[in-house]
Length: 422
Ligand SMILES: [Zn+2]
Ligand SMILES: [Zn+2]
Image 1 (cartoon, rainbow, N blue to C red):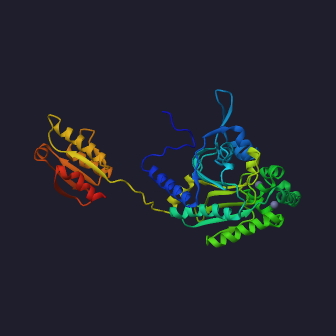
Image 2: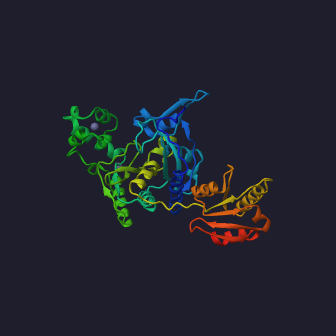
Image 3: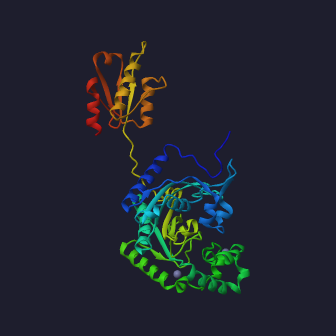
């Protein structure tokens, strides 16, 4: 028996309806905020991620699905959405459109990671990216979008963490200060942090090791190292966020895992026993240039949809899933000449043509078994007839919820159902 690869999951009927709902809200919120959908390839040239995500990141170093295609090219399944969207923005000359250009995407991403709850090797993200503006109001907008998406779904107990990691100038000063601070206790840091200190000192700040966090007690505050531009940008972002009324916290240790962020970074998590990160994003004013040579600012967020669904489950949120009302056609009694069957098929065609979700028996079931099956389907109404009813041009309509049954002329059925269901 061949099984699905580790870290992947089948989404079956019964669960997929929740995904549809979450995706529907994603599209609605995107429309309200003026973001348009972009669909980019599932795979890209490996070089795009090496440049766009960063050679030194865990993603590029350890987690990518990279292979050579039959033409000898190095191809990688996208581990995230931003690099591909930046490539598409440049390749399609969207920079010549009126700016900002605001895009959203929905779809699977791939990372070779150790699978656990909310962390799959094939996972799904909703993301938005906005290009061409450095206005702090846009930073506020992206954070607000994320928060709105979650609250529209019915999630509560959210924590919005915001920070500024500055630009490369202020960051190099801060990195130096951080290195100096940790100099005397470098040996006590975990191996990961020791190598981060060389490659990207900021990442030391979000090390999950308790001992590292203790060592960082009293370490330099990045806010003291922000240049004038970064500092005033951050100030304005905070002011705009206050206008929204959305609760948020400034966290000077929040740096996010990706190297490309500049200035604003943020994360949204749930609080409580099942605390976990749902979304992360930030500004990336140098990323477009790194990928394609044009200096264009950008900002975005990626939202982990598996985690959102887990959080909805944990918080007991009842999603208002709508299902089309089903009409089941059941036949009663003997049918030696196949007359009943023919009538049932004709009625099925007529009902579907009129826009109803209609089903009939396909398993040769008895009337009793048909009624039971209609119940399992969740049918709202069952149309029942036998040879006698056909002859008399009438049929029975059973309301499954009320358990009531009435007799109708065959010709009036569609109109009557329309009046019931519309
Ligand atoms: Zn700066
Ligand atoms: Zn560490």
